[in-house]
Image 1 (tube, rainbow, N blue to C red):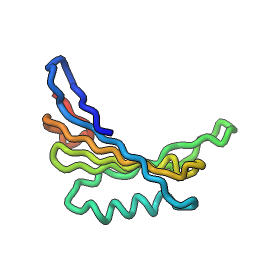
Image 2: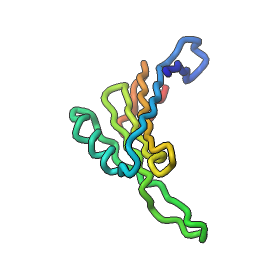
Image 3: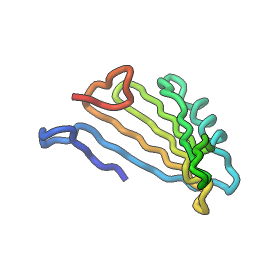
Image 4: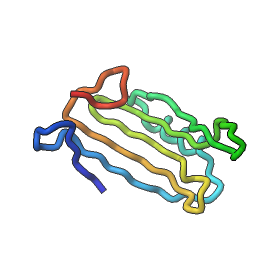
Length: 112
């Protein structure tokens, strides 16, 4: 589903976002998915991987296999989120954002 968004009170959309969920075979590893998109999105700026901290219930957080990666080219952004691979859904999300505004080269988000 694609949805418009605005950054201010302009009344017209500043951009559009789309999110798609893909189901994959159980046991698929986050690195398999992330590596696939890293090799396919050549020509896009790779903004890097992020490991999310997970809690083991003891109060000690440690890195786990929930990985997100973002890519940018011009005013377009693609994010891959693998946090649902370990669930019974065995799925990952792809989010795409296209906007009319310029992005700060050091920032993943659009600013006016």
